[in-house]
Image (cartoon, rainbow, N blue to C red):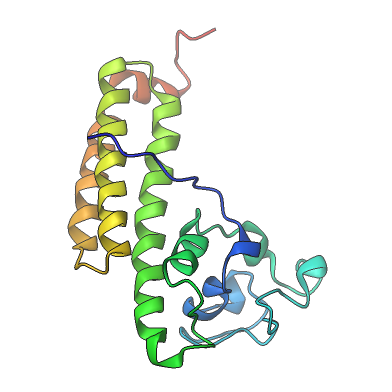
Length: 181
């Protein structure tokens, strides 16, 4: 069964600031200061907006400019409806867990979409699309709050991508020796 695939574009306006709470920050990686996981960023406002959004780079937050959850944040936020980590602290561990799982699954889907754009072979495009569909089914399981083996999902996807990396057309792309116009 073919599932509709999600948008892998982040939409911060539709999210409850999950990346700004769940993820740790490391100043050396462009996040202005060190911040532990599951701790709200000091710039996160009550409406889940960022009080320095217009001046992230000037404030040392280039990491925020380049980061994308690939749509996992708004999906996790939508999953819990009116409940969020602030309004319903008793559910925050569930919310954090859902975001973490969806973030990984959406990130893997993003890699597959990128790979699909690099292959000409219909067989490989179909294999990659089938893997993306499998990951989307796992996202649906997360939404239903069922257990999902994220490590196995990641291992399966990365095995396919490693195999793809040995294909002649991909090797040619890496070495710059292509027959493409």
